[in-house]
Image (cartoon, rainbow, N blue to C red; front, side):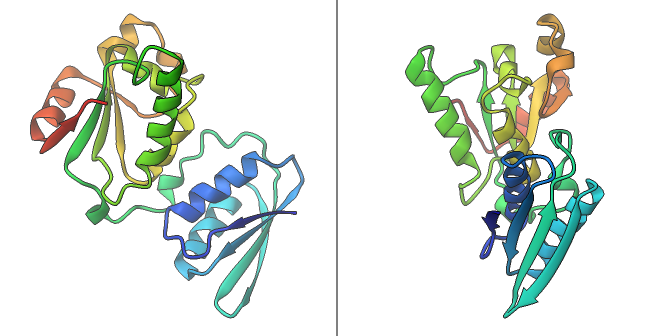
Length: 200
């Protein structure tokens, strides 16, 4: 049985780890989740039940052991941020801005981009927004290698913003899988209000 050890993790990490764990097992298979925080246990249990999963739990020495049977294959549309809101003190007043879909236009650029997005969530102070415009919007499309990273960052309270004009120009609205489509005014306001802007 696959095991997800979320002990010592604060919300929303147990939720994110649980969702990731479920994507790695087959339909009707079981998974065990270990949590040592009652609030996180309640959030994870509610998340699983709302997605039609059968879940039971036991508790020993302050550790909750949840056993879940995967009964749903596609959970990509589930937003874990609905079950746990990150304390605002971990959100900084700075933003990342992406004009392109990778850090550099070569094979190394792809590796750097994947590593970059995989690391943002580990920062002590998360960005308030990730702004995507021009070809940067490709990062949030359904075939992007970092789209799940963006979803996880959204769950942590980071706002992912896409240029609506760019989405329309490239005719990819139906393929947007993370973030929200915005307009020039809102994007310019976000740029103006940020203490710092980072262009990777």
